[in-house]
Image 1 (cartoon, rainbow, N blue to C red):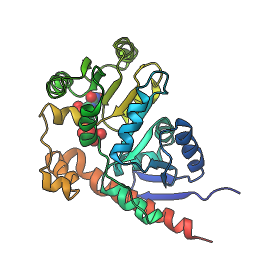
Image 2 (image 1 turned 60 degrees about the vertical axis):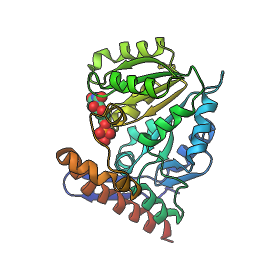
Image 3 (image 1 turned 180 degrees about the horizontal axis):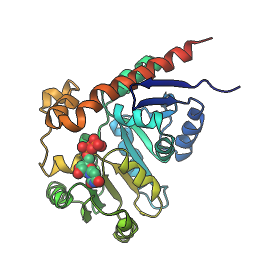
Image 4 (image 1 turned 120 degrees about the vertical axis):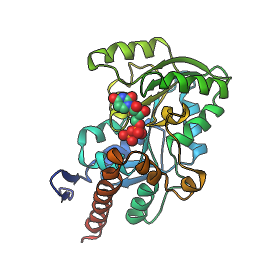
Length: 283
Ligand code: UDP
């Protein structure tokens, strides 16, 4: 019997198609990866329920000789909204341990499964904490952001985490025809940890495209992390982050790019989630 398919059309450009038949496949992929076992499903999208400590342990395990490489995607409502309507992106995410970032995801799984996530896991907080927990000599490569930013973020990380070895920093505004050279340069540096800051969905698509060729032990799509680390972009004050309002601060900084994302797209995502809930309850 065919699984139900939810369709949502919002305005001219908003179309979300949710295909729950993919759940089984993505859960299967996650379990095969051995990275995550308690999975929240938002339609076709599978998100691991992990604490910061558990995710850190999975990363450390991936650094062991002979272990399978691990890719981590920090999934917020924007990422989830793309994944629900774009099969290519969803397929790319099958290579990842996808974790929850932000209030939109928390609301979505509470609606669908009446159970939230143990912790909020955003890359901007998780990755620096992880760097502090890495073994001495772990090799770090930063790829992405505007020219000079990865280098500056790398310098700051090296200062803050002197036990790590910075083995490369490369900006993210390269030409498509240079992509293979970039991948070769990363592989030649033999990083344990590769941070990729190309924005969503480009960074996860890049990692998925070159998963093996990059040669890194653990790879992360980190969004604006380098801009924050290099202090090119200010982070929201602590009280806003605690109240899970960091998105509002970012909208105020870049309304042209982010206002639609955090209003129309988030609304479309939550409506799609409600739609899934209705489908689940249908006899
Ligand atoms: N970026 C890049 N190359 C591109 C486009 C973007 O390196 O072709 C960088 C950009 O400079 C920024 C990061 O990707 O450092 C995107 O961060 P952000 O989280 O703001 O983007 P989002 O994922 O929210 O779209």
